Image 1 (cartoon, rainbow, N blue to C red):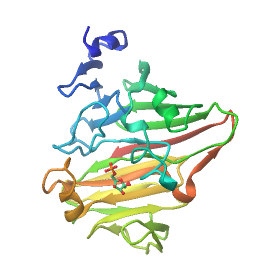
Image 2 (image 1 turned 60 degrees about the vertical axis):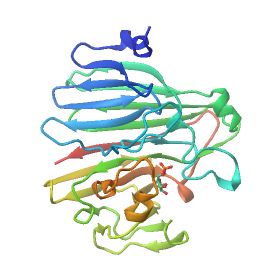
Image 3 (image 1 turned 90 degrees about the vertical axis):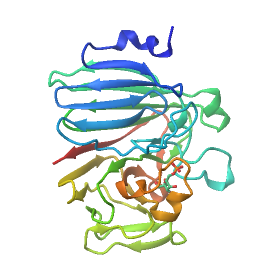
Image 4 (image 1 turned 30 degrees about the vertical axis):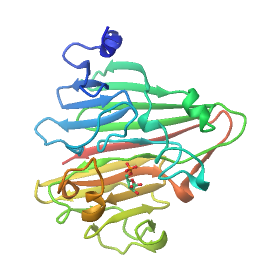
Amino acid sequence: MSPAARFDRFELPNAVRFEDTPGGLTRAVISTPSAEAQVYLQGAHVTHWAPRGQRPVLFVSSKSLFEPGKAIRGGVPIIFPWFGPRADGKPGPAHGFARTMEWELNTVRLRPDGGVEITLALDPTDGTRAFGYSAFQLRLRLTVGSELQMELEVRNDGSAPLVFEEALHTYLAIADIHQARVSGLEGTVYIDKTGGFQRKTLNDAPLQIGKETDQVHLNTSAACVVHDPVWNRRITVEKSGSESTVIWNPWIDKAKAMSDMAPGEWQQMICVESANAADNAVSLAPGGTHKMTATIRVE
Ligand code: TA6
């Protein structure tokens, strides 16, 4: 039996099928009257979403790896339970373990409005226990339709508070970084990771990217809008349960050093990440659940 055949019972005729990809991963291919999408079981990773008549909204590098245990460069990596390198020199992969682990498929459902809802879960494994995470459950509920809705739920099954960072590390596809603008973060305080982690305050103008940008905007739950004048569209990322927004573009030199990014591709992406990171790390009481959502729309 092929790996994808394990999911036959979840298939929905003309709407959801499962397939194996050449690198050895399995993905759901989703088609609804209003959009199409792809989701990998590894990392519960959405790599494609396009409303009908639109170009893809998510950027994925043409050099991305699609291999077991390797992070995918693009789409929406799920970052948990730490953001960036693990703190205090403790061992563990960058951005946590959730994005490179195989998630369980829980449910696939056709909604009355024609959209498709998929729920995936990640429970503790020997791998997560090795990093000290043995009593949590992660659940991602995705709704694919004219909007892409993502809800990441964390449950603390332990007897002590669970402290974690998280992000829906969304790579948005744009025509040209030099011409794009991001509004919604005006006046917020951010940690500038390209400038020695200094704290700065964004001015009142929409953000224009003209150099390597890697900043964690704190204490903001505002929606962000990416203005793309070349493709004549606006991408809105609306969120809840998220107090940080991360903006990232590697620019020329960092991109060159990345083996999973093709030359020039850095100009066609911007990450607008709904997150809880740094000061906004979550401390979840025993038995508690925390939900973070992000909804993407194109106009
Ligand atoms: O969200 C921005 C960031 O944390 C950057 O610092 C940058 O390194 C990026 O994520 C990608 O990280 P990755 O581990 O996927 O190479």
